[in-house]
Length: 175
Image 1 (cartoon, rainbow, N blue to C red):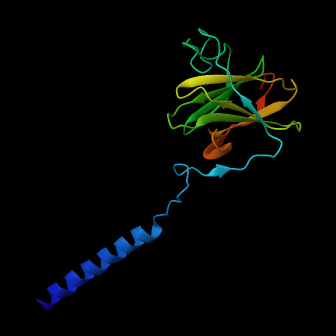
Image 2: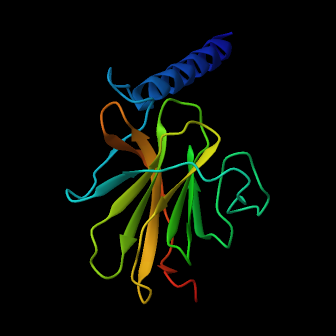
Image 3: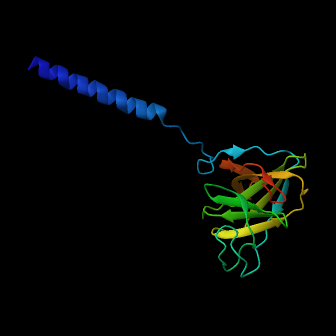
C-alpha cells in the first residue's frame, strides 16, 4: 500500500511539473499585437507604391491561365511567398506582382531591392484578398533585384512578419 502511495505522488509531481512548464513557456500576447505578427523595420527612404489591378483577361503570372482581373503575360521569376502574400518579378517590362492570399484586413507587400544601390521600393496590394496587383518600375537591365514579401497594415503604415526573401533575379531575365 505504501508503494502505491509513492507511485501516486510521483505521478502527481510529474503532472504538476508538466502543467507548470506549459504555463511558463506560453508567451503572453501584447494588448496591441497585430494578430501575433511582428513589425518589420524598413529603410527610411523606401518608396511605397500602391499596386494597380491588371487588365481583365490578362494571364496569371504563375499559372499562365487567365483570370477576371489579374496579372501580366510572360514568365514571372523569383516567386516568393509567406503567410498572406505571394510575389514575383516579370522581366521585360520590370513588373512586380503582389498577390494577397489572406482575408485578414492587411495587404500584401512585395519589397524590391537592387544590387546597384537604388533605394528600395514596395509594391502594396490594397485590392483585397485573392487578388493580384502590379507595380511597373524601370530597373537597370544589367542589374539584379531581390524580392521581400510581407504583410502591410494601411491603418498604421507598418509592415509585418512573417516575411520571406527571394534570391537575386536578373532584371533582363537571363540567368
